[in-house]
Length: 291
Image (tube, rainbow, N blue to C red):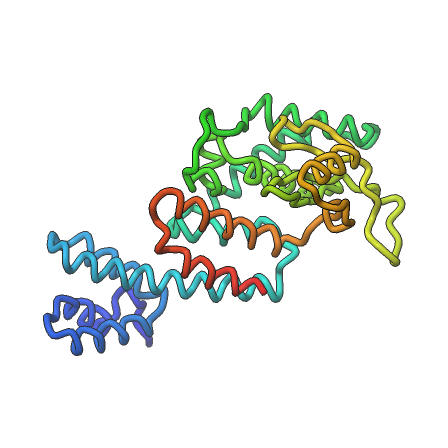
């Protein structure tokens, strides 16, 4: 019978050799541990906690990061090719880049609680605008989601678990959350990315959907303004101010893959602004998984 990986004596023996002073020998040990993949992480974390040698801890941290990073790339690739209509899964994968040990079930439980609060207030007799009013009341008034209290470039405001914990996030983070909650209730809300990294939502008129094209947008929703409603004219005005022609692409919902790719792009920018520009290369590599 195969032993569980956390009891695997060979893996334990390899980890015990991570203090090997000879670089070539260490590289061989590291590569053999790396072959175990994510199954090696719990034992590596235990080894890290059991030593006060900062040099050894750094070696262990680098191996754990490489294992988790490669697994994330594979999971992003799998999502992009087979489940890319699932925006929640994409947002969780994005968040995993920074929070590898995130409690996914706890995150889903928090989302479920907010969804339930919205569901209790909805009924089929409500108009589209009345349903948006319910969404806005629950998300912004009852659960008090808001933009950061001060202007900041901190990356943490992008991540889903931090958004749910602190009730603070960038407009794109709150917008994705709004979209997720609406879609979980079968409401026709989709994300739109405007120039200047602006994320808004479109409420679609699915009664007019045809095989020839997407559903007509009834109105737009602004997450920066507590779900304020606006029309196509406001987008046209913004585009003119930016000296851009009102191309149809600016008014159409975008795919979850594009939204998650934009999140990685924003993360790279914010990390650079926070003095961590060296992480741009690996983030760009993760974005390539979404192509």
